[in-house]
Image 1: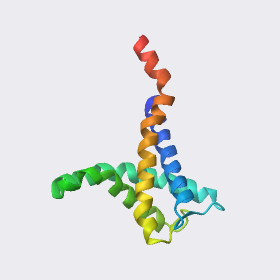
Image 2: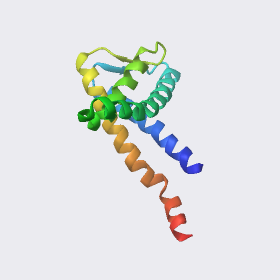
Image 3: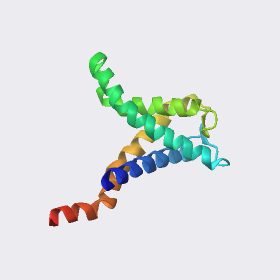
Image 4: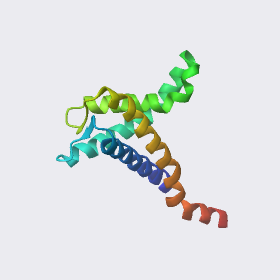
Length: 133
């Protein structure tokens, strides 16, 4: 159970990190920092939508467009960003067409790297304990 909670926290943290990086490097992608609660809400909604959409998009893509299977992460990230941007008080906005294209790629890359690397750091002790048992 602890491992599940740590992995969930890592996923939420990685989503926040991805959105922050997109805000820092994309001129048309903006986070409203004056309302920090809106950003927290956006991150939580994004993480939930992303975790629900990825398996669903995989199932639909596998059935109807198998050539797109490699882009499932980017597709579900785009849809999650789209839904979060549509929420009025979520604190995230996109005003540039190029940002609509690049934001999902940036957020997906950062999220993928963070969810791959952070468990190595935070779960190292648990892995060592299990190996010792």
